[in-house]
Image (tube, rainbow, N blue to C red; front, side, top):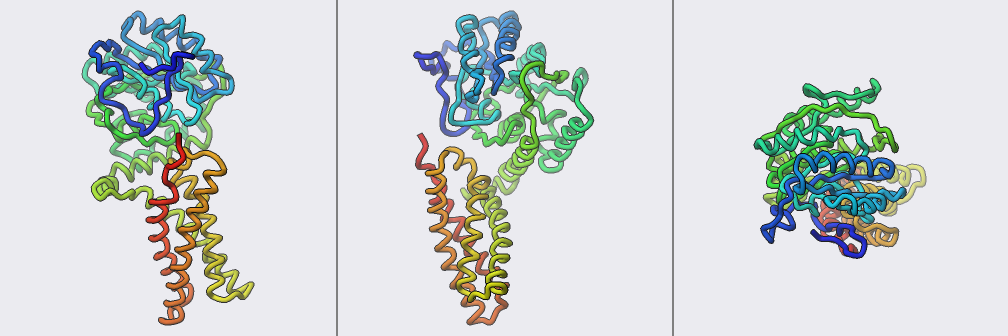
Length: 411
């Protein structure tokens, strides 16, 4: 086990979100850990001791000495990680990881699994909304041959305790939307929104995960080699301590995740892997560029008709405003997975300078094209502008892909 001896905290894994085929301690051949259960936390100070006590008591009786509990905390301001760390002397199977650079439940789960030694990997919420006793049912289903065992609210024995009509509608609506966008993944389980499950290490070993938001189960089914799935019913409980972290942002991230999985695991994804071209990223870049077209044409129209500037100056100024629009959206969305690893205004400004330099070259290309089409071929000025934008977009994507968002400043 890779730990920091000075404070007994697990070292946070870095690099790709990929699970090793063999547990860390298996190289010696003496690993006896069957289950590695990750508990992702953020501001769960009032719950953490209770859930560790309940889980330890349950698993000590069922599989004594064959499990580990891994708390992965995203540097909670209430010092959840510190409280969990103080419990280690009383619970020898407990491990604690404090993440200070990365954020997000899904990536926290994967980082915990990367630091684990178990042959079966699991996840349970740290707020006691997932009934711990269902763990033994899930574990038995994996032992019986399932690749993945899921706790579901939508099978016999499952349900929700006191959800409002609106929350039930949003949950079901999200599931229906998922079935439309990604039927091959969501159609395999009754509760794709569940965050309570176990999976065989072999079923996801070697797969590079790329999650968005909270729904790690979608990533596991979509990218892993999960053949047989079993389910056990559970009743979702309302939390007694702390505050709910479900907001509108989680629903937006859920939709983004569905689209990303659809693109990367469907036909486009297969083509992308064969030709080694990031089609999904190109589609996002194109969507941002499409928004920039409206910004560009609007400013171009104002320059030509209101301010009455010449064609060349109008083209340059309108394109520069569109560049700023495109950079902000690309940095947040298209290349967001990279920019989140280069935190800080200095790094962001460097990315903008590189992006601007590439796009300035694109402006020159665009200016030459629009003048040629308008002045030499007599094409309509707006149509000429659209053609020039298309040519410049191809240039901008390819060069920015290779230059502007390279990871060069990450520890």
